[in-house]
Image (tube, rainbow, N blue to C red):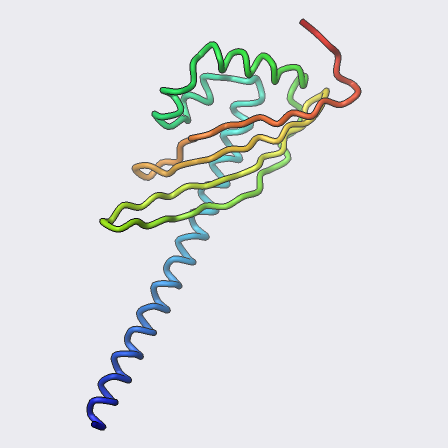
Length: 156
């Protein structure tokens, strides 16, 4: 009986140590993904909104977003957003990355961020969802939440 308890204790210890190492690796990898995804957002958002470039968005988009985003819709969206006036400053993004594992070895790495941007006539929060595919971050969702200030002028 004593041998059995020693063996059971050793196996339990091995499982606990292995689980601890696994959790440590996931935490390290998660922080790395957070840094990568934030750096991507911090470079992509200004490139897109400085001149409201639909091409800059599409160059960074997942195939799904490119397939669903009609050029005329993007043009209308960016024309509408340009009512905020000229770009003034990028104020950073908050958010984080997520890893999900599915049975059968399927996994997804994604990130969600809210980026703040200041324009002459208002501000905007850009809500962005990224997916990591083949080692590259790609934009899967891009939503603009504008807030016009009293300085905004109405235009055509």
